[in-house]
Amino acid sequence: MKKYKREYELVFSDNESNRKRCDLSKISIANSNLTEEKYEKRMRDELGGLQKEIYPRLVRISWLMRQFCYRNNRRRNFFSNGIELDRAFGIYVRDIVGYDTKLITGQHSMFSKILTYFDDFYPNFDEEDPFVAIAKQSTEYDYPYEHMTFECLYLVYKMPERLELLDEGEKQKMGITEFMDYVNNYISCYNEEHGETYIFNFSHSLYPYIRIVKTYEEPKTGNVRPGRQTILS
Image 1: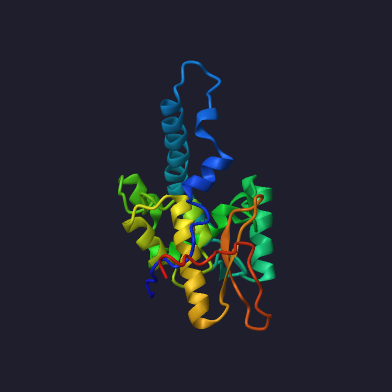
Image 2: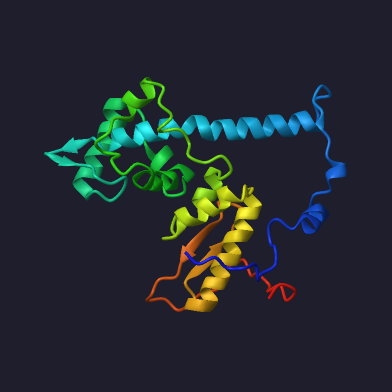
């Protein structure tokens, strides 16, 4: 992966712009026992703790999903295993187990995108039993990042160089908005060099992610339009 210098303006982590839209001096906490500092820490701890706690469970559920066989055919993928096999699995989980995996595998579920990383993180994922490792209190299946959150993984899940981008973000201890600007600069520079390849898809109702331009489509403009930083170019 080529490392580009910053050539484009900050879109998401520009504190001056953000403070105009969110004046920190106007923030207060309803519970009088909570200071703003305590509130910030608790919010960070709870949201971060949720991701770290749910991750090993996603690993275990995903492993179980790929152990299911029907007519001697095994679910090798999280998705698109063939109509008959996926249909039988869906009926089995709803009718016999009593739940529905769409909470995890639904099209717009963030979890479904996290699952796509497991083959990268665990090359022998199907063969090794995560229940055994976790029962032994092994850290093998702990969440692998300290600074890269689920939102960061979702942002780049379609990109071939996603692991390199995440490693750089982790190395630089980037927050979510810093990573979004880093990726936005990367794809903008990449598109200049190789032609329109990546589009930054940003929506207030969905998680932002990088979309890949299909070869049979005319190049499309994403809804994030970075301006070049003439100071740094």
